[in-house]
Image 1 (cartoon, chains in turn yellow, brown):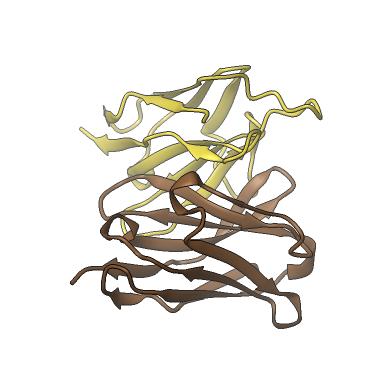
Image 2 (spheres, rainbow over the protein chains, first blue to last red):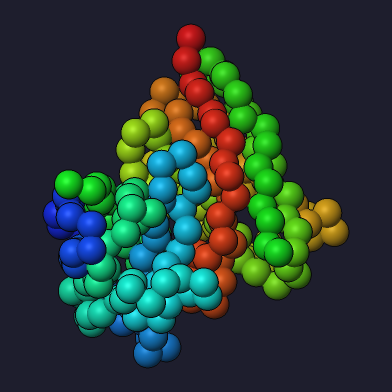
Length: 112
Length: 117
C-alpha cells in the first residue's frame, strides 16, 4: 500500500511566525483523470478533523488565507504564513488517488 | 448545513460484534460515496472503508476485510458498519465522513468503540 510520510511530527512555532509541514508519498498521487487528490486536514484538540486544502492547493470555504498548499507528484507542503493561537492542533495529509485512502502520521503544531 | 451523526459505539468483548450507524442530513446523501475513518486513542487517522452511492462498490482496508461490512440505506439517509470478530486493536473513535468530488470533506463527531474484556 501507498505510504504517506509527514515531517516534522512536532512543530513548535512562535505566534506570528510561519510554519511548514511536509508530506511525501511513496508513489505519485496523480490520478488517471489528471487530478492530484492530496488533501490537508486540521484536528483541533477534542474535535473532529476539518478539511483545509483539497487537490493540493485549493482552500476550502471559510479557511483563512494564511493557509496554503503546494506541491506535485510525491512531494507536498502545507504552509501557514503567520501562526495564530487557534491553529494549535494536529495536521494530517491524506491521499485519495489510490485505494486504500491513506493518511500521514500527523504533525502536532504547538505554540512556543 | 452538512451533518453526520454517528451512533452505536460502546464497550464490547474481544470476538464480539457491534453495528455502527451514521445519519446524514443537509445534503443529498444518495449522491455521495461515504467513508468510515477511525482513530485509536492518542493516535492518527486510519481510513477503514467506503461505499459507492448505490452500494454497488465497497472498499476496505486490509486489516478489517472479512470482519467488517459497510452498507447504506439511501431512503433513510443512513450509513452502517457491521463489525464482527472485534479485536483490541479495533478500539477507536469511528468517524463517518462524506466523500466529495475531491475526496473526504465533511466529518461527523465520531462514536467510541472499546474492545476489552
